[in-house]
Length: 484
Image 1 (cartoon, helix red, strand yellow):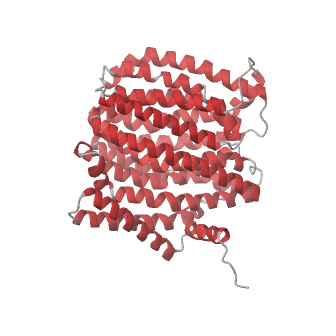
Image 2: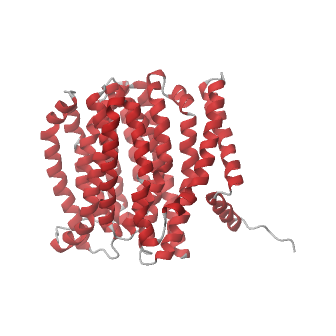
Image 3: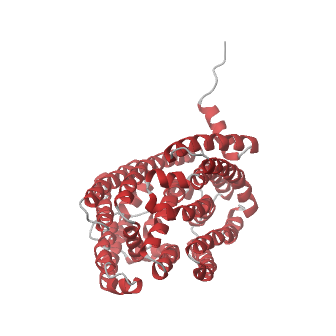
C-alpha cells in the first residue's frame, strides 16, 4: 500500500505542477487576449469548438484510456492504437472540412466555415499524442507530460498575443490552438522512447475497443451535452452573449475540471492495480474525495464571491456581463469532483458500460431542463445546469455504492463541510466587496486573504476531514524532536 501511495503522490505532484504551470500561463495569456479581443471573437470560437471537440473525441475513441487501464500491453496493442487513431483522424477531418459550411449556416455566422476548416487540423495533430501519452502515463512519467503541456501553452500564448496585436482578431485564438497542439506533440515524442512499427492486430483492436467503445459513445454524448449550451445560446442569442458565457465557463473550468482531471490522470494507473480490492479502493477514493473537496470548494466559492472585482480588475467593462454566469458556474464547479471521481471509479473497475448508462440518463434529464430554460434567457439556461448537476448526483453515486459501498450519503458527508465553509467565506468577502469603495485590485487581494483565513477557521471548527488528513500528514513529515 505504501508503494501505491508513493506512486499516487508522485503522479499527483507532477500533474498538479503541470496544471499550475500550464494553466497559470494559460490564464496570463487569456488576460491579454481578453483585453485585446471582443466577446464576439470568443463567441465564434465557442461555436466552432463544438464540432472540433466532438471530432477530437472520435479520434481518441477511448483506446488511449484502454491502454492505461489494461494490466498488460503489448507492442501490437500500441501500434494498433496508433494507426487506428491516424486513420480515424483523417476520416474525421475530411468530415469536418466538408460539413463546415453547414455548421456556419446553422449559426448564421458565415465566417465560421473557414475557422472550422483550419481548427480541424488540431484533430490530426492530437492523433499523434494518444499513444505517447498513454505510454508515459503507464510509466507514471507525468514530469514529461508537464513539460509538454507547459511549453505548448507558453509557445502558443506568445504567438496568439502577437497575432492579436497584429489585428488578426479571432484568428489569433486559432493560432493558439494549433501551435499548442503541435508543440506539445513534438515534446511528447521527444520524451517517449516508443516508436511505431508497421503493425496492426485485429485482436488487439477488438479487445481494446470493447472497453473503449463505451467511452467513445459516452465521450461523444458528453461533448454534445456540454456544448449543447453553447449551441443553443449561439443559435438563439448573439455571438457577444455566447462569448460572455463561453468566457465564464472557461474561467470556472480552469480550476474545478483541470484540478480534478490532473488528480484523476495521476491516480488512475495506480488505482487500477487495486481494481480487485474493493476495501482498498473505497479507502483511497474517500481520501481523494475529501482532499479534492477541501482544495476545490474554497477556490470555486472564492471565485464566485470575488467575481466582480476579478472581472473589473483584469478583464475590463466589456466582460461585466459574464459575472452572473461565472458565479453560478463556480457553484457547479464545487460539485464537479463528486461527479468526476465516481465516473473514474467505474473506469478503474473496468465498467465502461456503466459509465455509458449513467451518462445517457444524466444527459436526458439535463437536455429536458435546458429546453425548459430556453424561453427564459441565458441566465435561466445557466441555472438549469446547476439543477442538472444536483440531480446527477443520484445516478453518479448509485453504482459506486453497488461496486465498492461508497454511498451517496457517505460522499455527501465527505464533501459537505468544505462546501459549507467555502460558501460562508465567499458570502462574507462578497458582502464586504459590495459595501467597500476600494479599487478592484485591492478588494481582490484583501478578499482572497480574508476569505482564505475564514475558510480555514471554519474547516477547523467543523473538523473537516481534508484538513485533518493534511495536518496528520504534516505531523508525520515533520516529527517533533524529543529532548534527550
